[in-house]
Amino acid sequence: SRLGTNNMRFVVLFLSAAALVDAFSPGSVLIRPASFGSVAGAGRRTTLRAACNVKAKLALSDDRTKAVPWKKSVVADQRLLYMPFLEYQLQYMRDTVEGLKEIPFEEHLSLAKSSRKPAVIESWLYESKDFEKIRLTYIDAGIGAQVFNSVWYPRHSMDAPIFGIDFLAFGPKKVLAILDLQPLKQDADYLTKYIDPLIPLRNKYEDLCGRMSGKFYDEAQFFSRQLLFGRFDNDEPVMASLYPAFKEYLDYYTTMIKALKKDESDSYKSAVKELHRAYDQYSAEKDPAVGLFKTYWGEDWAEDFTHNFLFSMSVPPPTADGVVASTKGPVTGGAAASETAYFKNKKPWDN
Image (cartoon, rainbow, N blue to C red; front, side):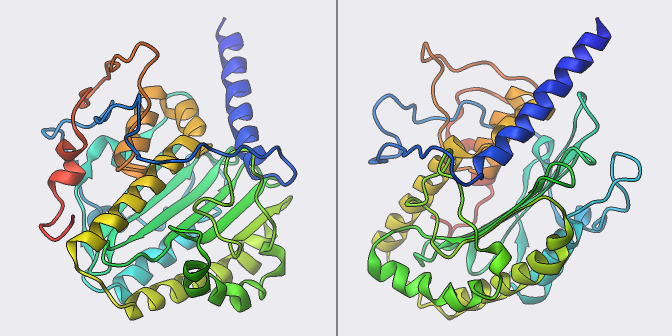
């Protein structure tokens, strides 16, 4: 019956949100991933399952940012909890990021409305002199979910950490915040150079000094000991603590990147590119938000979005029989990563 179907959808949505909350809860069982070795290791395809057809309509970001901040939620009388963060970052990028340019990407990944529950997801994509990619995503599902996510990938001429921003709320009593300079390496010299200087800054925000659960992520891979992490049963700390911390970390990170010495040798950039590829692969396989995407927008779109936008250097796992599954809409299976619109539109200096 329709009532039974609606109840089932509610249960699925609730479980997806619960899984995300549990993913970052302290005290969960630690699951350590296997060593990466080569990203395209044994048993992995070297092609993407749901790479977008290069003929698919492309979207740009600047015109769409004119609608930010959004005026209202898709659910009446609900707050857009993290909209001030999105608005601030976009303006900060315009004002301070040198050589900021839009990167065209597949239109169907830029904006999607859910046909299952009231929800919308919109994303924006940029590059600059110092950054290979800066991506931003906002999810509005009313009180059910408010999410702001952004990741900054430095140019391959630097082995600097990737800047990761992930703010989530599933109702007023399930508020999560993760902010980190995510190290590409874990050796002592690297951490001393890039991570230890964060200690005084992190210590300013005691309520954001929690530790993540290891149920989905291993803190020893692509996370630092100086990450900001908060888990709250109300949303008051969002503007009181998280907002100023977000602005300080953003300013610290971009200032640090500008000051770094660049190594333009092919060998160096190739090595850093592989570290970025490993980061994308790890994140695509471990990110619990993928389940949320599937719940609201379906499995095909979720996989497409994960591997062709969020973590565009990742390779999805093969199906059980090793066959590339068919997809819908402006998507074709089996296209090489270099055939996606993102890679087709990269500049000559992007290796």
